[in-house]
Length: 395
Image (cartoon, rainbow, N blue to C red; front, side, top):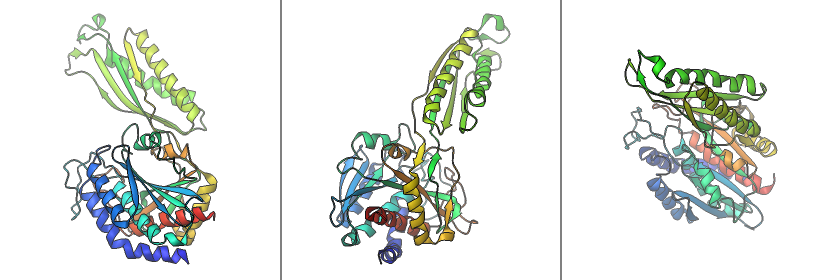
């Protein structure tokens, strides 16, 4: 039975995939700078005898052909970039690159996909169709590596009928999985506001246009974009994480810069909110004699898991890890650029638990202490291969 063969292969290749993960973790690279990581992935594919091509500079796309390869194609995706974080773990595979760390588990994702590739390549005489492997750069940085990969044709020739991606999840124990059909993760847009006034002496407010005072009005007033303009049934978050202006207690600056993020699940409301943010900011500043510049470059769209595909994958997971180890996930306001794929192809983005008994390896992602129980690698590579085989078979 192919299920047992996949599970056996996952156990067999675990030491190899663990070593791959250690290498990638020790040599992290920032978004769109994954040159050595990409070369490492390419080398592993070559050793397996899997053909690949480079795309989007550091991205890689590869094909594994089973029997009757033209019958159907599905895609498996992993991201490769790291974060600008100084690692605080004391482990043999600690980051060797100062100020850069795989704190979001992309080393795990890439390792799992290489493991799944090895399994699927070994068993290619036992399944029909083609599996497209997508190793993607720049998930952590605008405009998102997925958007660039798509523009450069990663979803063409052959076009996948479905796409799967996984992500580490320290809130669940190793050996478990998590799924959510339908809307899962929010859109994520960055908000850049510049307020230009007229600086001067703090003791002479009548001679200046105070951008700091105006920025306070803008920040508090913009909260009504969510509280009074958004449908209360549609989750929305507008948060400002940085405000910068001024340099002394008695000097009012000419300019204040405000940086933030807007997130929601409704694509139509998303762009309506952009307009409200711009109009409110510009009009408020104008009322006090200041000038506002507002930039909201379109970021990641909301992530929509195809309900039918995701329910199927959830059922397959029950067969792979056991029904008690399959969990239903809550919606998240965090963003993920896998969402770009889900707006073109039916997609399923699922989670693999990475904590050890919910007591160890529980630091959140984007944390300097993040790490995993590496038994999760067996779950990740096996589930990727298992989903591919089942979806190609139309089960």
